[in-house]
Amino acid sequence: MNLATLLERHRSDIASAWATRLRALPGSRYRDWSFDEVVAWACGALDAIIGSLRSESPHVLEAHATAISERRAEQSFEIDQVIEGLLLLHEATLPYIFDGHSEVADDAVDAARDLYASLRRMAAHFATLFARSMKEQQEHLAVLEERNRLARDLHDSVSQSLYGVGMYAEAAARLLENGNTQAASEHLREVRDSASEALREMRFLIFELRPSILREEGLIPALKARLSAVESRAGVHTELAADDGDRLPYEVEEALYGIAREALNNGLRHGRATRVQIRLTRSAAGTVLDISDDGIGFDVETASQKGGLGLGGMRERAARIDASLSLVSRPGHGTRVDVVVPPRPDAPSHGHGNERAE
Image (cartoon, rainbow, N blue to C red; front, side, top):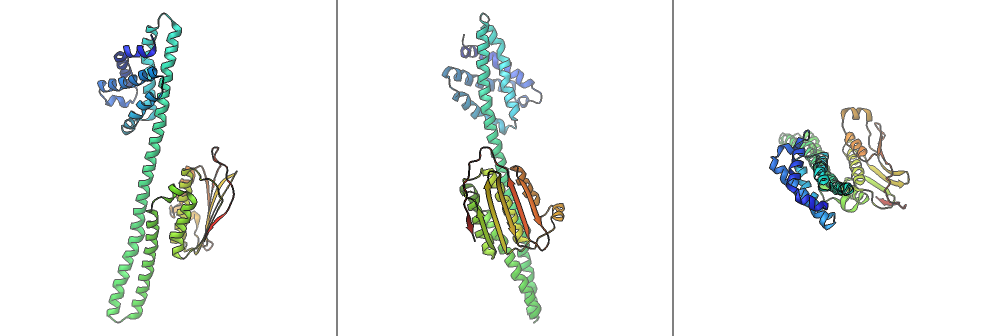
C-alpha cells in the first residue's frame, strides 16, 4: 500500500491521534481550540500531503502552508510551535505506516521517509512565510513609529514656534498702542525669528511626508532630494559626493538615510550650520557614510547622557545593519558623523565615480 492510500484510509484516526498530541504540547495554543477544531485542521494538512503525494508536486503543500500561515501569525503562534506541531504528524502516523507495511520493513522505512520529507517541505515553507510576515510587521511598526515621531516633532517644534509668534505679536500690538515703538520692534523681530523657525520645521515635516524617494530610487537620490528641499532652501551650502555603483540592500540604505537625516536635522535645528558635506564611499572594505557640518557643535558625552539630539536612534540604526558609528563634535568646532558598514557576502561589486550636488 503506498503512502497516499494509507494516509487516506486512516485519515480520521491519524488526525485524531495528531490532534491529541498537538493539544498536549506544553504551552500549546492549540489548547485554545476545541478538539474538533484541531482535528479539522489536521485533516486539512493530511489532505494537502495526500494531494502532494498523488500529484508528485510540492505546490499543494506550499499552497496549504500559505493558506493557513497568515492565520497562525494572527493567532500569535510562534513559528517553532507551528513546526513542532507539524512534525508531530510523523509520530502520530508511524504506527499506521508500520502496521500497513508489516510484511516488508523496507517499504515501511521508505514510507516514513517520504512522509517526513513532505513534512519538512511544508515546515520550510511555513518558516519562509513566517519570516516574511514578521518582516512586514516590523516594517509596519517602523512606519507607525515614524508617524509618531513626526507628530511629536510637530507638537514640540512647530506648535511652540507658532505659539511664540502669537505671544510676541500680541505683546508688540499692545506696545504699539502705547506708543512704545522701540520695544514693539524688538518683539516684531522675535515674531520674524519664530516664524522663520516654524517655516524651517514645516519644511522638515513636509519633506518627510513626501512619497518615499528612498524606496523607489535609492539612497543617493533621497539624500539629494533632502538637501535640495531643506538645507538649500534654508541657505545652507551643501555638497554631496558619492561613489557610483549598484544600490545597497534596502535595509542598509534605510538605516544610512535615517542616520544622515538625524545628523542633518541636528545641524540645522541646533548647530546653526551654514555648510554641510556628505560623502559616501564604497570599496572591498565596506561602505562609509560621512556627514559633517560647520555648526556650533556640542559636547557629545553630555548629549549622550541626556539622550538628546537623536544619538540613540542613530546608534540603533547602525546596530541594525552591523555598522559602526562614530560621532565627533565639540563646542565651536562643528560635528562629524561616520558610519562604516562592513561588506556583505552577497553584495555586488561596485565601480567608482563621483556625484556632486551643491
